[in-house]
Amino acid sequence: MLSCQTLGEGIIAMSLNKTFAALADPTRRKILTLLKRKELSVNEMAINFDITLPSLSHHLTILKNAGLISYRRRGQQLIYSLNLSIFEEVAKELYNFFNKKI
Amino acid sequence: MLSCQTLGEGIIAMSLNKTFAALADPTRRKILTLLKRKELSVNEMAINFDITLPSLSHHLTILKNAGLISYRRRGQQLIYSLNLSIFEEVAKELYNFFNKKI
DNA sequence: TTATTATTTAGATAGTTATCTAACTATCTA
DNA sequence: TAGATAGTTAGATAACTATCTAAATAATAA
Image (tube, rainbow over all chains, first blue to last red; front, side, top):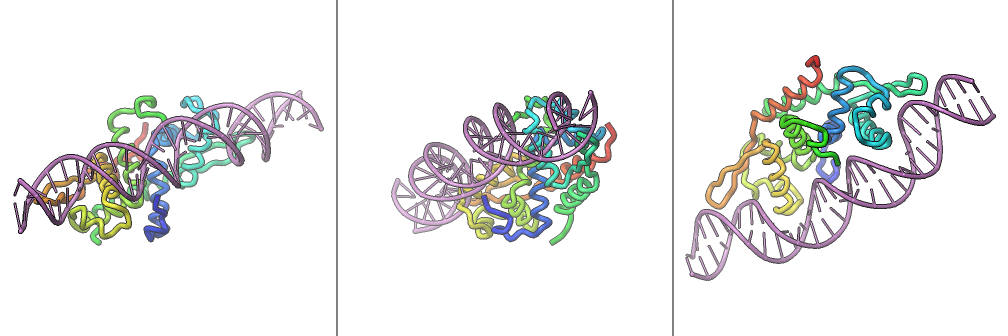
């Protein structure tokens, strides 16, 4: 696959890449939907899926790298929560994609 | 990968899948950016990329299936153009994802 | 009708990603 | 400190996707 650099994309386009790729997976969108209700530890999330913890962890890493979620430690648990601000940004970005003149 | 059915997703979620997957690729976003300026035939688009026509055609198929573009024939050429309405819908969908209460 | 141009489809391949099991790290508790 | 709980990292594998070349389809021109 062509890299971002190959296509001469800037930092904003690169982060859009990550964001859309993160949102493209149904498991990850389900994670986001769960976190929309309330922040959750990994084990609490895991109840809702038929995948192993390492797989879930993999998806969390992708969402983290896309800036869509954050976490903090509470004792032995890692509590994940939604980053609301970046969603608005992506929605704006997408909206502008149409309405902005070049 | 888990299918949409496995996750019990509805038709809207499934189309979101396609949309985000389509937008996740930088080449496809570049196609959309080009079409934002004006509708183009495949050969006209091809000038802007270092990939073969079959590869470009592959990307166009994905964008078509996601509902993001359409085409019409003009003689020997297929003229592709942006579907503006679906972009607004995705932007709205994304915006609601945050702001809507469950 | 034959050749040419425009584009897609088919089939193969290489790179990426989602998944698993096994092993590791971090925190808490006894 | 030893054991238990919570989660991540490592390494392997199977499925998916982007790409290519070659062949097929569609419309036009000679």
